[in-house]
Length: 322
Image 1 (cartoon, rainbow, N blue to C red):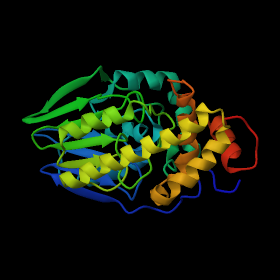
Image 2: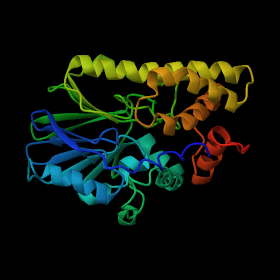
Image 3: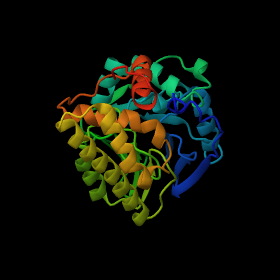
Image 4: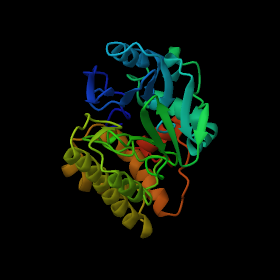
């Protein structure tokens, strides 16, 4: 293969930041690795996204303990992907919250996704022996649920399909702070392998209407101004809409996936190629965009074998179907 598969060559340790983005509200970020959010209530803590392994989650917990000794009672899963959820057991939370579609995706494809992502992200899964198994929510909801951490209002919203069919964001209306999960990225390539391209712009419009003053995106640095929040939403929308329009044009005229992929790389790299995990994401992104353009509404399940076949077909010299 001409490139190291997915993120297998990304073995350098990342510098972790733990930034307060509002009173008692924190962003755990690591140079483009998956982010976590922390909300400190009157008598308990909520964490948004668990990290990939309990070993990885231990560092989030250590950072939390530098600012509060309140118990971590709530854990919110923004979606089902393994790099976000498999560290959940470390928190020993009383409640694990997810949208009903996210739970359905765990049932349908959680085990395959776990195997797939461990193969794609060896650095993030160095502590995979600490994972007890799939993470299961204990509380699910259809569209939204409001929780009160004492006097702090926390709205948990499934505003629409985007990065996955079950995307969940956490919104604090009084503070105007948004924990966006992978519906929004900042300086990082949106992963679209399980995306719904046609719905993503509408979901971003709903987030834009909230008018956040601060945001924790799925990847990238914490955002503490309205201008930067708007820029992150605009950047995510620009990437996903341009990619889908380009790939759809090739798919609709019957061009092969490889031709669409090469055209997408050429067109997208000048503006977006410096974003984190661009090379990792693009084969999976183009494959999903191609499928959706052909009318496949529900993303096909990624497996470790399918991952490798796709990579070989698009980045290597193989002819495997993907």
